[in-house]
Image (cartoon, rainbow, N blue to C red; front, side, top):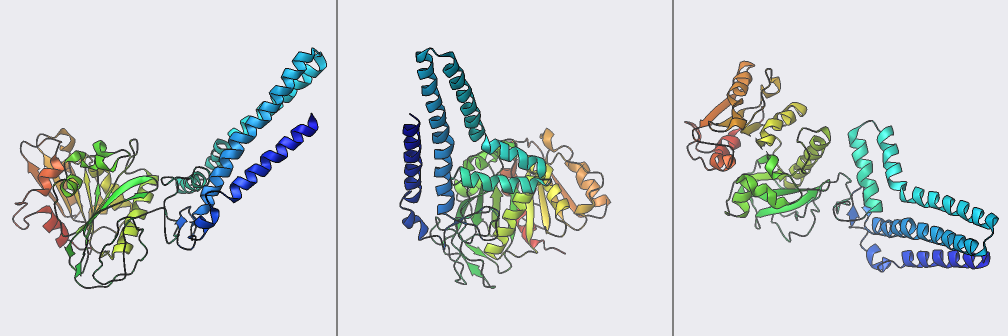
Amino acid sequence: MREKKRIIKVIYFIILGVILFNFNKLSVLAKETDISYVKCGTARGIPKPVPQITTLAYTLLVVGTPIILVAFSIITLIKAISSNKEEEISKAKGKLLRKLVIAALIFLTYPIVRFAVNRIAVKDSDKSSFGSCLNCFLFYSSSNCPYDSKGSGNEVTSNTTIPDDPTRSRGDSNIVSNSTKYTPGSVTNNNPGLVKGTYHGKNYALYIPETVEKDKPLIVFLHGTGERGLSINSLANDGGLYKHITQDNAKYNTYILMPQISQNDLWYNQNIMTQVKELIDQVVEENGIDKNRISIWGFSLGANEAPFYVKAYPDYFASSVLISCAYNDTNPTYYKNVPVYIFQGIGDTHGNPGSAYAANINKIGGNATLKKYPNQGHPNFVKRVIEDTQLDSNYSTIFEWTLAQRKK
């Protein structure tokens, strides 16, 4: 019987090895490793076939091995019971118990490792990087392993093509960005529109304008609570920028980055802030954005927490726009050199502190402008702001104001 067990085990591992070495025509996958990488927090990235292979191996070992161990032990126990020999039954029970413990440990390998790392690691960013890397290796998928043709390892992906052409034409939207080169001068994008991608398993949308001045501006828009989730289409819930671009075919003369966070996330969580800043940096470099013309906007939840980005990354943003802001810092010194436009709806209880916040910013020597709208509640507030063509005595629209701001 023992010989049969050994033979079966040997056959099992031979089959496992054959499957691994021939998985999905490995040679076909491997031939693209020079340009095909997944991100895992490393300087160069991981060749794409690697996590696919490790996923199969992990699945077979974690599922197949415990089943075989327990199955043989159960068969042994059944035979012992049929023999009515107490000593053999006792040994078989002990063996089954040991195999169950081993099987449980194999099943729990992943959570045990994650728990150990979370206890050892101090920085949340280290925990996140390791978790992303482990998930990529053990559970390969497009969300667990963000695709990166450059292998930069920063977990920000894009499906934009950025050729070296000075006109910065945009090609097939399914091709990953493969160049960070750009040529100064007036720019016309041959294929403007909306590009969608992922960062750290979350969605983002990037609006590419048809024409843009040589000093390319960027608006980073932080959405509200109702736009959180796993579907990029949820960004249309506020009736603002994303909806205007996708459904109303609106056109703007600035790049607009619209990251999305998950249902229970907050913009000011350190982990999220690091990931969003990483995404902004990548978009800036890939698109040749003028680093003196980056503006951060926020609506509702985003308006409450956009100030934390201005505070965390001083000298980074040229301006800020807060729509329905309920945050009120009595000493907002971080806004001293960053002009901010605050919008408050008279009928919007979320935005009542806006006046006090603007006053506090001006009190410390900042430049805050407050505009109130009568009969304006919380819904569709962004829509009203971006459609306002009589912003104030100096500017027609909030876009005109934003594009006039440059970092001091």
